[in-house]
Amino acid sequence: MAGHSKWANIQHRKGRQDAARSKLFSKLSKEITVAAKLGDPDPEKNPRLRLAVKDAKANSVPKDVIARAISRSQAGEGDEFEEIRYEGYGPGGVAVIVEALTDNRNRTASTVRACFDKHGGNLGETGSVSFMFERKGEIVYPASAGEEDTVMMAAIEAGAEDIESDEDGHVILTADAELNDVSRALDADLGEAESTKLIWKPTTVAELDLEGFQKLVRLIDALENDDDIQRVTANLEVPEEFMAQLSA
Image (cartoon, rainbow, N blue to C red; front, side):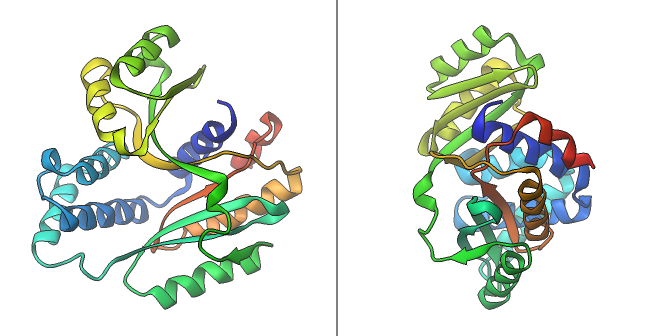
């Protein structure tokens, strides 16, 4: 998949292979609790919660874990969490956006800064790199969802903006505010998606040599290993020959 989609797909597969299941479940549960706290506890009436639950199910989070996460929001939990976005540059000048849900702003800021410093990056101010991205909705389907023309027609009818397909599957892009509606329409037409989420889509991409790529992966791994960090996005154009390095 070209550009941002390839990088997002790599991160998606790598996350499933490498992330400790308990840590992944904890992050997904936190998002569910916060989403339910900010809106209605019924996913059908709360778009953010619906997407959070879909993401959790796509990552095999058990139904009882999802239910407990929603219940915690009604028991007064979730108020302590704050959404924070950090921005900076990784090795080779790659733009990096870090999204966090934290109950301690100082702790998280210190951890993020230390990760950037240790792995050859520089943490910047809010807005220092986000101008190189657009906020979009992303829906990922496996190749088994259908032929490219079939999925493309379904996406167009659902109101999507764009679709990228290759042998790995289909990546459908939407306006950020339309993600929930497009997702519902595609669920009815193509079935459950492999992934449904808001992303930062690069409008410009950077390139790295192999050494720089390996350094960037170590930075992203260090950030994602922290419990406060929900998602890390980079504007890297990944050469095909570097793909195998992720499993090295």
